[in-house]
Image (cartoon, rainbow, N blue to C red; front, side, top):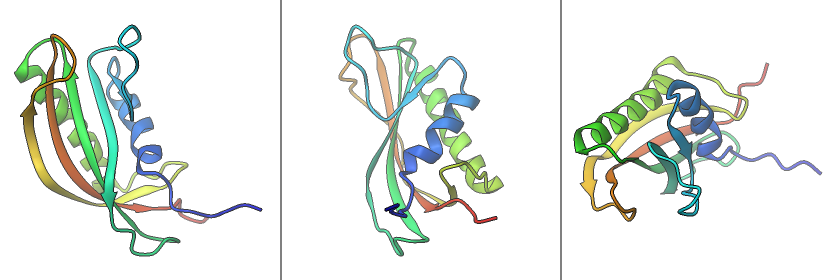
Length: 136
């Protein structure tokens, strides 16, 4: 039996971030200390409200940028990743997993202490509309 479900928001976003931000480690979790790479973009779903489990999800993601260079460079990396996601919404970029149809920044870029030695951290929250792949 095949269960149809809305895609995970990371399934949609991460392949495009990896393509658009070469040289940046993009994922939904951070590796162990001896495998960790910087610069790093982390995308994690914090929740959201799914309106229709077949056709429309609203995912709130935590978008976090880490670098070893400095605050300004980390802010720039965050802004670059945010722009990639916005472009996906604006252009209605369809991926094999689905696409994003709306964008609402609920917390803008904010500096936090980084849990990793000698790194900088910038984080924001974005609510995204999630749709399954379009049927052809």
